[in-house]
Length: 329
Image 1 (tube, rainbow, N blue to C red):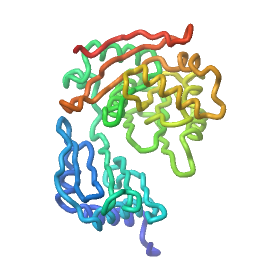
Image 2 (cartoon, rainbow, N blue to C red; image 1 turned 45 degrees about the vertical axis):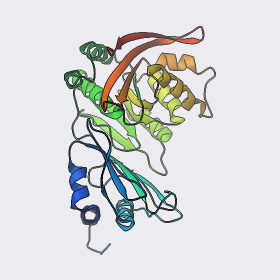
Image 3 (cartoon, rainbow, N blue to C red; image 1 turned 90 degrees about the horizontal axis):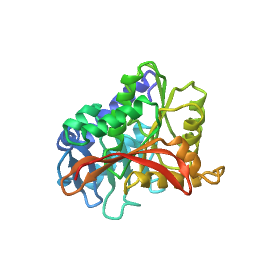
Image 4 (cartoon, rainbow, N blue to C red; image 1 turned 45 degrees about the horizontal axis):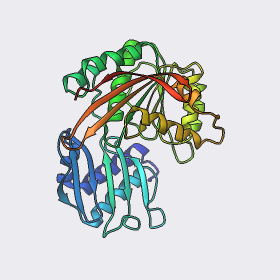
């Protein structure tokens, strides 16, 4: 950096370089509001997933062009990718989307690869979910009631199912019902969008993990604790936070077989913690009050809230649950 050159101007220049690296065709596809995910394969083919459409190959990139994109993203964040450090996970500089890239040393083929999961442009309302046929009016009413009772909600679904977008809609409804609450948000990549007047947003880094941020959150006078995605032993720290006077939280978790699979996945993540309780299930039954399962139909490329269940404890070796609403077949 030149002596009189600000960090901002360096960042701006890196963004312009990234736009040049992408080229006009790829940049136009990226900027299309219907684009959900943009992917480069090692063979140079570029694939795009758009709302309501099958993935399709739309162009090709030379290996040098793909490598330049990854290197520019790395440089923007003060990182370097080499044959010894070929993996990169970061926010895409142009809009904060989730970016994962790999040089050809780990991507089997002739070139590098990357995937860009587009950040949501707008926050949908639960009513819009009903209007678009993603959830029923009864499901919406159940969620509104759950939120009004300050219950902790796990949004469950597989890859690309729309977990974060649904979590944002739930958070939007929460803010509308409780506009004076203080929200603490913790995530790996900035995907949660919160319209609250009073909120603090934390991101993990190479030196600060989610467990330490959850402990920090408890010192920040939260009314509600929101977690982008629970992926590891921090599940126990979230459980304890939700169980100790901070109800009304929202988190997402990756599981593919209905809302109950979210409970199993949550338990598995807690077992990774060195201070896990034994048994675990009673604590989960007390802290996780509702699970919302959203799935993507690969045949129709549509998403739907398949089931909402309420959890009221753990007795006789099983969770006490009630199905509040299902998606009609």
